[in-house]
Amino acid sequence: MKKKILFLLLSVCILLPAAACGEQEQEPPAATLPTPSTISLTVWGAEEDAALLQEIFSSFQAHYAGEASFQITYQPQSESNCKDVLLGDLEGGADVFAFADDQVSALAAAGGLDPIENEAGLRASSLSAAVEAASVDGALYAYPLTADNGYFLYYNKAYFSEEDVQNLDRMLAVAEEAEKLVSMDWSSAWYVYAFFGNTGLEIGLNDDGLTNYCTWNSTDNPIRGVDVAQSMLSIAASPAFANRTDTAFMEGVRDGSVIAGISGVWNAVAVEEAWGRNTGAAKLPTYTCKGRQIQMASFSGCKLIGVNAYSQHPEWAAKLAEWITSESNQRLRFQMRGQGPANTSAANSPEVQASPAIAALLAQSEFSQLQRVGGKFWDPVAEFAGNMAEGNPSGAALQAQLDRMVEGVTAR
View 1 (cartoon, rainbow, N blue to C red):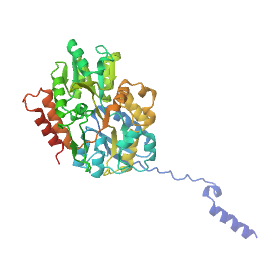
View 2: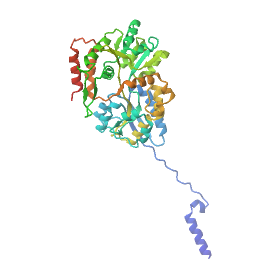
View 3: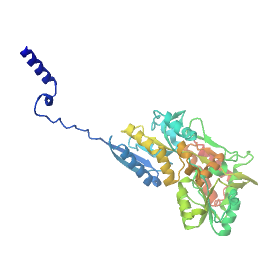
View 4: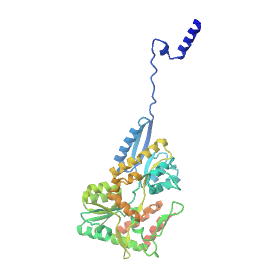
């Protein structure tokens, strides 16, 4: 019996940890935590967004610090031609990139973007127009970032009344009397659309999604192409009109020579810094064409964040894209850059709704069209408008110039 009891005690001692049966305790081996891997990501964004993006990267790295270490490289890249640069070297391109929504179809068709997985939450939290802009054939291919990629009128209230800015002729007269300037960029076809958009003359994409149709040279429309061209010449002849790029517009705002101009929300903070409480913003004015007042039109659109389908770290690239476009970071973007959010909650916040620039953009939206044109639209229109801005120095017939422009725009 004693042998049996001793055998049972030994058996229990073997099964229990040594500390329970012996007089000496043994230290358990120290736990070895895996070393977080280093994730290298390259991000392309607008040069003006550098400070904002660095702040966003810092918060992203802090949030995911326990899961990985990150090496995030920011490279300035224009959103307007991001597609062309990326498609030149997809495998060597950025993991995450900002781009204008008119490029989404081409990027998806070329395999640069894959449809976004688990898109339901993104659709539910974004403005419907932004979701539409980020979609191809009903599938979401990019993350909506802003819903403000359009243009409107900035004006200095020290010179103009709210009534003055309804009519471009009146604005030019006020500016001429004050020996100041009203600015618009005719080197960009994006802005030149303002004169043609509400005339019945048309521009758009053919069914192939690449080439354009264009009737801007029409001779049988109630408002003909030559009528628009003549109006542009009349505007350019005013000593108060300045054909200036966006950068030159801001230089004039700061030095006091420009008292009104057509631009977008990306300049809202800088304009307010220059004009202070005299900062005004409104829809675009009307202009005189064929003896009547035509409301100036505008292209509209959104800025999007894409994830390169060839990224070496697609899951982390997607997480970063989500972080950049989150509600909190879209609010931060508005605070730092004055850009209108695509996130519904952020867009409906009191501070965004109170922004003069956003209010002006919303007023102009009634006269805007989602930008959907092929790549051959830009250069011929810019060339034509440049001639108009210079007063048609060659003296070439306006109809011939319009025909040449349309031939270039619709080339296959």
